[in-house]
Length: 166
Image (cartoon, rainbow, N blue to C red; front, side, top):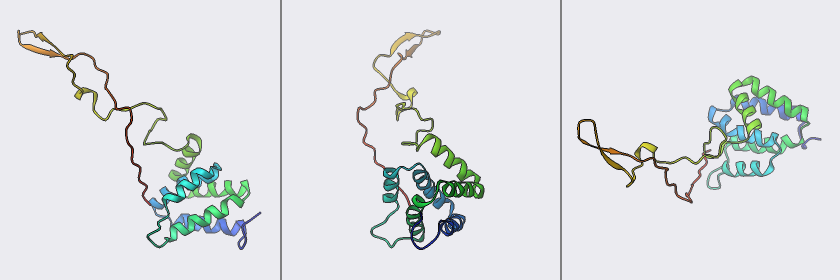
């Protein structure tokens, strides 16, 4: 089954040609779109598409190509989808590795590099001061502040603002 007008083979040739013309930034923008389409995650794909549309500007050639990709890709056979992924990965091995990581591990959230849910303090631990410090006599009789071990106090709710660049 294919979208009207072009065969899936012709659509794939266009996609491969366009991928070759994409700038590095456009490839970075295309990466999550391809991963979401391949992983069959329509909600993620819709959210990504919302970030690359601009109501106050004319639609760019890149945006038109991504829209066509999103129209065509679901109608391609799994073999054709695999062939596109293999071809773009051969064209740009770094892109291919990032795509594999994204398909395997899912998208990173808020820059989390290792997939853990650790809470990170915005203040380095060595800069956190408390009133529980003890003053003791040093080796030469001078006063030395001995800091008690402290666990950082983190705000319960931190407002996060996200912005997407296209």
